[in-house]
Image 1 (cartoon, rainbow, N blue to C red):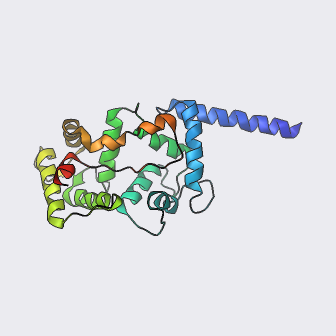
Image 2 (image 1 turned 180 degrees about the vertical axis):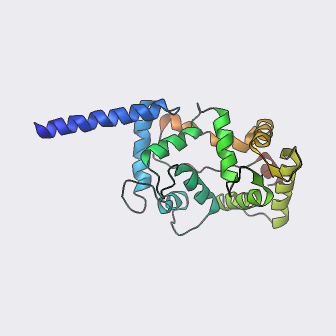
Image 3 (image 1 turned 90 degrees about the horizontal axis):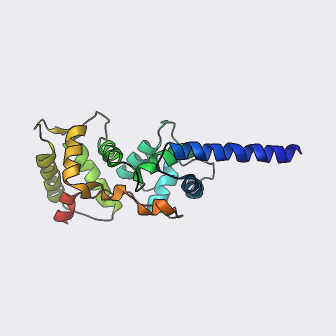
Length: 213
């Protein structure tokens, strides 16, 4: 009797958690439940402890938890909302929700801004953009010369830094992205409407970058 009661209580608590997470994200309750299967697979990539560690994420992205990449580190930092060194299920759903087809474009734009704002100063500076472009190219197994990368950075700042102060603020970034929507095209993952067990590669390739490639 006690065992059945305990199971019933756990089931009720779990259903409530799913409902709460769905209410705060673009996910439906069934999508949140499906995303838990994805979370379980990721959280056991290296050590099955119920949390996604930085090593788990790196292994999921590169099949090698020893490969260090700035892009993977930034993605982990943004998903680790509590900044406690691990990604819990609630954080996972909350952050993954930004990539849902039904998520507001403004949220996608702001997430991308934070991805590039490496030093968390509230601005994207040239060196930060260059570091992230290089990391994204590495994540995609692409190599460009330093001159080409610098050209991408210079062109981006020429178009986005409307104030001419050598840095891009959130409003300038938003205006730039709205004019160049391909910059965040991979911020929308259609498969999230039908969550699978495959972990997506969150690669942001700008319109400028693509033209150079």
